[in-house]
Image (tube, rainbow, N blue to C red; front, side):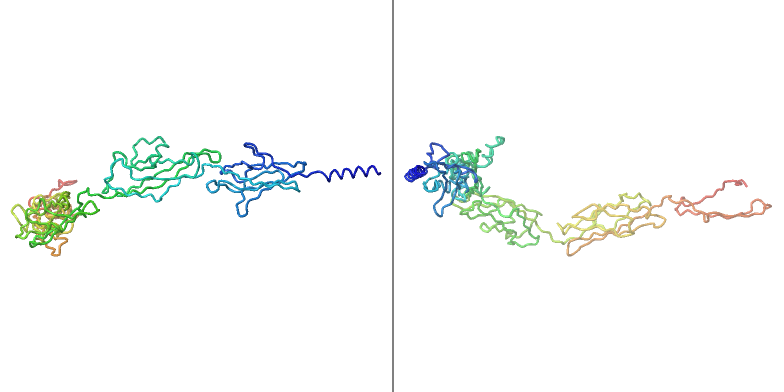
Length: 528
């Protein structure tokens, strides 16, 4: 019993005198994913929830250890640690362009002793950023006489990625699409080109700008990075921006007449000095425009003049006797500038002489004005036939609306019709048969119609009337007709020869020989 107690005391004394050492992390080694996260780096495109590292260490006495990770107060916690296994999991999205390293405190403990180490985790780049244009919006003013091939602007874009993903090259959109597809064979239509490396925008060789054709151009520029991996796949990222190119005017364009074409009018009774029309021209170059000087080059025949400053066209001061219905004046507008009357333009001003409604419509035949036309014709002409014996012309010597009138034929309804029904200035009048049965000699030996010409759109409504007399000639168009459809005769059988049986009567309404009736008898017993 005494010897057993002695052994226990000796064992207790040895245990109480033994050293208790703190646990420690293993050395990471180059590229190791086990240890204390020293020299550890992680790509910014690592997915949240990924197992990214394993904390690993041991206790000298072989005691079990646990792990932990903390961050400075107020800073974002990017990782979580499973205490027993030491597995480190990403719990926040990474963005190298916002934060390129994470400071953390990793802990290992055996329950009595705790070791805390400060580590820096480096965030490596992934190609996740598009190029960004500087100095937006992109606007440039260029004079229209800028030389072909000259540089007019420099585009700048930056990409916050590193390496090739942060390098930027430039293309105009049409050229960029051409390079991607390799299918466009036509020459790009844009007037501009861009240097892929410097971003210098130039006027394409052989092209020029013209303020009068296009005052603004819109060019879409593409900024493309050098490409890189993102989530394990290679990708190229691009951005676009529109460059607004304002073309500035220079003195290189002739005058431009405003609100053409020009039409003026003058009444045939206008007095000399009457203003007819005013032309207006402006400098084709709108920056510092020149004043205009107006003149008539041709077409006035001495009847018209123009104010050289205002452009007002007037009748001349001497007695006016306008001979033409229409005058076409060639008017010149010249710029008054340093080179006097250097640039000019010419336009046409059409001046119409306006007629007064002082002539009524008039009917004519070969011998002059007439108010009665006579014709002889056979009855029942074919429907649609033209009455060729009538040679009628109608005329109104006024002009325009004053010479527009309507023709009307007044008489027995729907027997004849007149063509045309509407006339401007002059026409040959045609009378056409519309109802043949109504033209019947047995009803009328002559027909009378009134031919009217009445102005349409004039206040005066001048008119003219001509009488048309048609003398009808008879034709053999009727058959004899008995006075009764049947006759009944009775006679005794002993009547002597020559006795009258019955009197029959037939008439024919035609005239002359065509109206004379002769009788004959035939049939059974006709010989008696």
